[in-house]
Structures are given as C-alpha cells and as structure tokens.
Length: 336
Image 1 (cartoon, one colour):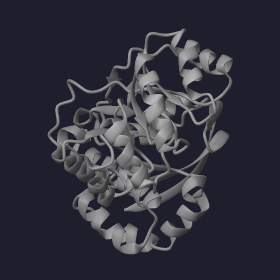
Image 2 (cartoon, one colour):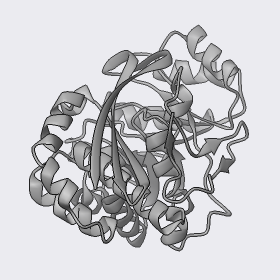
Image 3 (cartoon, rainbow, N blue to C red):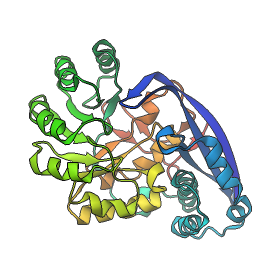
Image 4 (cartoon, rainbow, N blue to C red):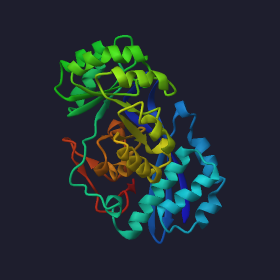
C-alpha cells in the first residue's frame, strides 16, 4: 500500500467554545492508503485535551511507514491488530484504521454498512451542536441552522438559565453536554429543571475520573447520563455500565471503526444506550461515522456542518437530517 499524510487546518463557521477551551480552526490529519488503483481515506483531528497534535501523529506513523506500506491488507481487522502492536496513539491508529476500512470497501465495491450486514433504512438523526457563548450568539446559531435536535454545550454558572432562554426559540429536542464541568450535586439539582425544559439526556456532567460522583448521579438523577470523557477505549465500556445509562464512542479516542464496532456490540449486550460522536472532523471522518448509524441509538456527526470549508465529498446530511450515502464503496470518500 502507498501511504500519504496531509495536514489540513479546517476553518470553523463560528468560534467553537466548550467549558475548557475555544477555537476558530481545527487541525486535522488526513491519511490515504492506495492499493490496486483504489484510495482509502481516514482522518484524526488534533486535540489539546488529549495532548495530540498533527505533528505527534505524523511522527508516530512515519516511524512505521515501511511496515505499513508492506502490510498485506486482507481485511481491516488484521490491519488494526497489527497497528495496536506498534505503540501508536489511538488518534493515529484511528486515521489509519478509517483509511483501511474505506480502501477495503472500495476494493470490494461495497459500502461498509453493507459489508457489516447492517440495514440503513432506519437510523438516528444527528444532533447539531451549539457551542458556549452569549445567549444572543447561541440563539443566532440555532436560527442559522434550524434542526430537530440540538446538543447544547454548557459549563457556566447559569447553565439552567441558558437552556431556559434557548427553549423560548425552538421546540427541538435538547441534549446538554457539560464537558466535565459540574459536580454530582449540581447535576442532580439541575436534572429536574432540564427535564422540564425538554432535555433528553446529560452528557459527561462530571470529571472523567469521578466514578463515585457518577454512581451518586445515576442513583438520583431524573435524566439519563451518557459517558464521553469517561469512555475512551474498549475496557471503559464495562466500567461505564454501572455509572452511566449510555456511552458516547469517539472513533479518534478508541482507535477507529474496528474497536468502535466491538464497543457498540459490548455496550448493547450490557443494555447501555449507544451513541457515536465526532471531534469536529471533515466529511472524511463523518462519512466513516455514518457507516455505523444503523447500529446506534444516538449520533453526533455534525462536524463537517460546523466547518466554513470542507475538504471532501462523501456522506451528505440533508436539512431534515436524512443521510444520503454515496454509491462509492467503503465510507464513500473522495478528497477535493
């Protein structure tokens, strides 16, 4: 296989703010793997919270470039198993795994959801994320993009008031994401008010390591909770089972589609709700996530919708949330 690594700096439509950071651009690494005239694409975005940069990912991959290019791609699972023996970060593994899956599907001339024998006639609608900001700016973002489900980023001293004000402007379903900013007592106190305001669930209210706090929350919160920062890799799913009602799986954090599919299966077997989320990827990463949606209860794959300029063609999300899957095999990605 021929390996190529490219850096993109993706401009965002609006400053994106959560409880711990703000940004106007998103650094992204795009991997391509070429074999027999077909090219597969994968993506992993940089993330300061996890101390991952484009440069660190590229360096890891360049160290094993020769082994990657000499690898005999029989299937993506075997390639992923090889990668995890090389001590790469999960972010770097993700980009390579996504590229291998896209390539594999293109070689077979089938989209991944068909290869996995899943029916894409029904699937959850993605939410659209409203980053933290002034009430006026958050309302303006909703009005700019009318949508049936919003995920609202919180983590301030007046979070319930923010949701109350936003509710005046839409009948959409709300989901709230505190990104680790609340305490257990705050979460339990906020939950009844948020439920009255049409909030469906709370994502990662407490710090990732506050398992005792989450045990208290799951016993007393009137709203379901979904793990994000507490659910990174496959082993985390079992721990989340007794502390959350569901898990939000991120491909970049767990290492790609291959482990994500196992996490989905394991979470379902435990009776957990399953969500897959994005990390502000372009259509490259979003098209990979979309292959999983027939298996999910919830999905957050609005990353490309938040960009000022996209870099690829693939899955299209229409204004009513309907997903248009390309006829091209794999994840259906072509780079601009």
